[in-house]
Image (cartoon, rainbow, N blue to C red; front, side, top):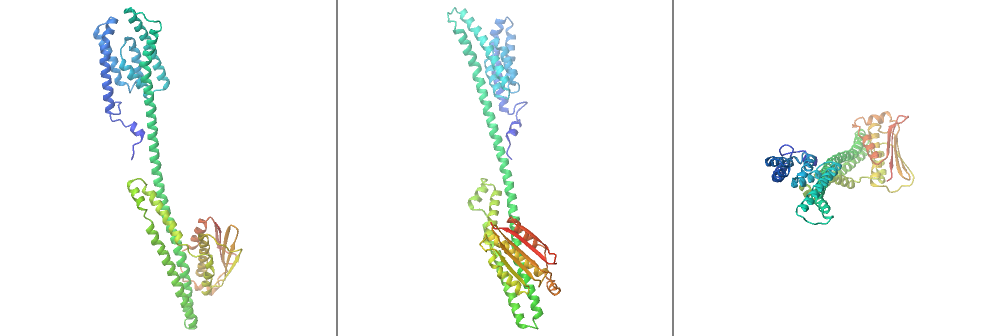
Length: 444
């Protein structure tokens, strides 16, 4: 896991308030140099002030040592600088203190006030010192020289460290913002990878559901007709040999059709399995970390789903006559009525309408064998409507399908197919005691 900018800022590894040992060593070195400088400058200060030299040296050493806490108390360091300015000591302490004040998270108003105070104090001290030096040396200078020297000296000692500190503060904030943005992007990439894995899992579930629907449609209808014909064959085997031979031929034809459709579906599954692995370039990129493996998996799953759907287009509306003819041959009276002008639809629309009729007829064979059934197909401007309705089964017909099992997934599969295309699906018993299945499927 990558350490964020906040973690880096709040993870000290140095002593006391220093985040690093390197920073502690730097501040210690600066404080030592400043203490030596101020101690040496304390000698002339003691002479001019009329105090013992040792006291002036101790005062200078203590004042210069304040740089040790410059990161912790930058305001206090600058206040000490202002306080010792009249003693003409603390050049290094002033430069480092103003830089630290501007570079660290001190309010800009405070920085401006303290920098202004330092500038004013330095200007006054320099003005007095230059005038005294000129008087002692009996130098004749213009009236402009002393103020000019005071202003330029004070600006030279104050402005550069403040401007440098402000620049470092702005750069530090920029780096922190870039760090935070990188951390945010990393978190977003992790979320995208998780979502890609979820999408891949969803695509796999959808593919399994689609395959289950296709298998159910192929097997249930064909096998149901085979069972009906086998029952009829058993009933007429001795009484009408010719009809028994005809029924046996129908059972064989339907079995071969079921095997052919199953073989086609298994072929699609094998071709899909061959397409699941990502191309070599994507696999290598995923192993190197350039592309999230989850995203590659999601793309592969989506490609597999599309390939399977495109390869197994399945039957269309042009095969409805053959489908109804098989039910008629099984002894079920089925009437087909078509309204509107027939036209070409998308393969998935035609396949869905065909499967609705097929599954509805399968349910008729299972639960109302021999009942008169009406299949209505309506071609409309922007949709296609399908309705399959059967009358109540007769006593003899109802008993002929007693041996057919029912898993209860037929209506669910039809509803899923139609709703997936944005259509409407309704099913239920009629007032006359039959059953009706209706579906309206958008044409595009």
